[in-house]
Amino acid sequence: MQPEDLRIEKMKSKGLDPQNWVIKYADYLYSYAFSRINDQDLARDLVQETFLAALERKERFEARSTEKTWLTSILRNKIVDIYRSKSTGFTRELNAIETEVSETDFFDHSNGHWNDQHAPEEFGIEYVDALENNEFRIILQACMSKLPALWLSVFSMKHLDEQTTEMICRELQITSSNFWVIIHRTKVNLRSCLQKNWI
Amino acid sequence: MKELSEADLKKIAYDCSKATFLIEKEQIGKITLREKIELKLHLAGCSICRIFMVQSRLINQMARKVFSSYGKDLKLDENFKKQLQRQIDHHADKN
Image (cartoon, rainbow over all chains, first blue to last red):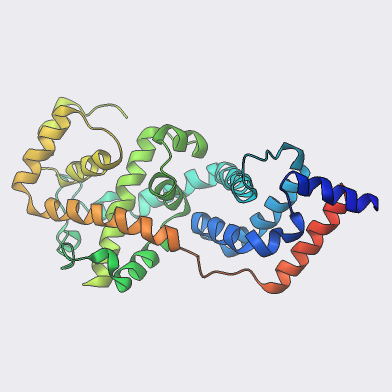
């Protein structure tokens, strides 16, 4: 056997099969990354980095994990690194948005009442099976894609990954009061966007 | 997050911004008993925030669905994939 073949055999015996990684996981990892960072180019780069990082630390792969979960966890760490490295940028973004889309847009700042044009109205499908409504889902998706990156990541980490608040704050390096402000504003924004585009 | 002060709580009865904040907090975290009571009082008198609450829950459920299908149809470019696999093979050989 050639030395190359030996190496491949060794990886295979551990359950790793890099020769088929792209076919098996590239699209999955790509959509995973995209759904969390909302940037196609960046998502593509991350898939590439994930595979290369995986090769470099293949010794650390343990057979009790599947290839897919292992690759996904490497990717997830890379995504968090991005949030972190951008944390100063995100803070700026947050501040910019606080001045731009401040709560006065939705609430009267002096008394906390809804401003008339933003007051919730019924969508008309709350009590029928809205979840099965495709059009509604597409609008929500469009509204979500307009969220600032930090908001989307907080929202997705909480609702999709169901991570604890402490963990999200630690990973994104935000304070817990910032976390709640973001959660609140994200929802008020999404709801308003839905109302504007649905009714 | 520190608990809301007495003055904050008093205002909640009339403050939709604070009430909706509590609605969000209650859905994914914990609010104090006092906050719960204040929120209940607010909702009893505010139909707008009652609508908000129903819709907020709906959005959470729907968002989970959206996320699980978000980008699902998105595929990487075939040329990029070929190149990527070559790169992986190359690295695997080297190591």
